[in-house]
Length: 415
Image (cartoon, rainbow, N blue to C red; front, side, top):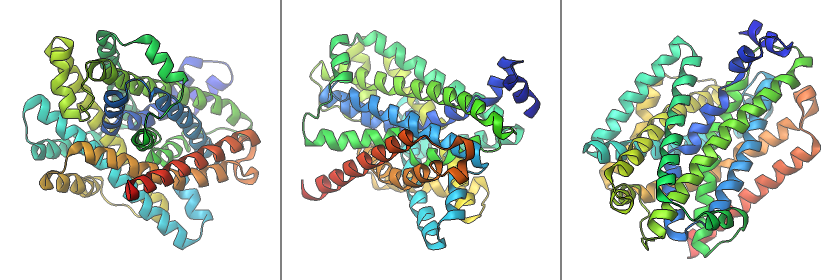
């Protein structure tokens, strides 16, 4: 792998070297199109039409910045974010970070399991419990493929996200969206009401995923061996990888919100905010069952692929923060429990999915603050240290997220 990368950096065999470096952002992008995104984007599109498209756009731009910084940290230090926090923060703070990161991981798994289980229910008539168990079995089996090399996992997950994207682009084309309204929703920021701010924070939490900030740095650490003089060149490849991966994820999210706006909102079905209702209503509104089937299989792929990535992230969190390792099968079993509890209690999957995304949003600053701090440290980062402007933008993004989270807390307590 090292030989191939050095060929690329010296101007030979560029195609081979690009393939060596390509992949981490696609793995991260899967988490940006998980069932939580389905829930928040469907509700946003059905309630407010295209009005919140700009939130998806801005969230995706922020995600590009953050994921690029995460890759930069892994490349510069040879360590992932959790490991750097463990080395540089006091031990009680490290344990706090691990606990809150695990809570975020649980919220992530909740959304992924519920989404995949719901897809099995809608497509094949399985019960939610049967769907959750089948999801656990499939994701565990897929995770075993890591023994054949991580490259195979990247190819499989990359194929999944491409299939999800293709399905939604077809659906959007068939729904005949209002292009003028789409452009307005993208370029003119607005909040129709106070609930739209709450929903926007859910979109932000579903887009900028805390566990993937940790994961991306791990996927980039020690991926290839380079001299310090070559690292800026490698970082340019990583940056392009991020742009491609995050752009694809952003387009999928925009297509999903626009699909809900073009079908449900346009026909006056503004109260269709759940994934199950969406699946059932797409066929009559779009004139055929194929629309529902495409939606259902995209949901299934999103749930399965993001569940795989979530388990990988959980392992990295535990090993990075507390140097503890448990068998992947045991971790998969443990993280299934919250979803099974939700199913047994009969909690609305839509409410659980949206709430999980808000929890994710609260976890973002805990990952983002140290990421900005570390990548601005010249001694730690060397020639890959952030430029001052990049650090300022990172601080601004983190501040915005904290303000939005404070609003959500106020809204939840007093509305």
